Length: 171
Image (cartoon, rainbow, N blue to C red; front, top):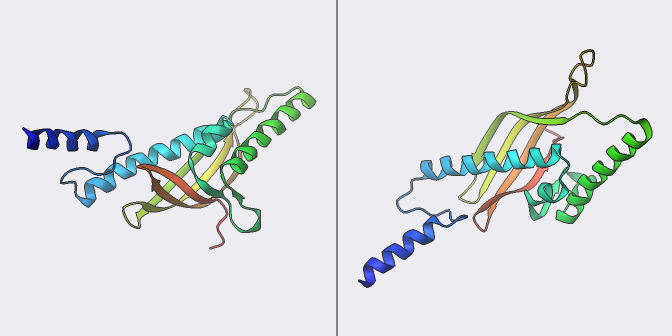
């Protein structure tokens, strides 16, 4: 009876959200599951950025996470929240001044390459693009920027998060 209870307890613990241990799981199975979780993380990151949701944006990073590199890097969740809040304020000020609302913004990640450097660390490289939606029949979609990214991702308490994101790598 005690063995059966212990076995059920272990299975229940493995099923908890955030658990990254599964009985008999191979590296390939773990990597497949981790890829799905990282894909979801990056979708949450992009939606938070496109909707200028500062809290959701900062939540995709580790507590000490950073956007950018060098002396101008934005470091820590509070600074990341401020970066997005400032973007929202700037958009609101422009709208108040011009009377024109900024068209919807869409970020895209393409040709991504994900490599695992251990059970709790991953490195991702990709190309990205920022696009503003068409605002009328004579106003085409506008590509605002494009580039390459290098991201370091870590699992913290069973959840994948961005540790650093550099959208202008030097190499």
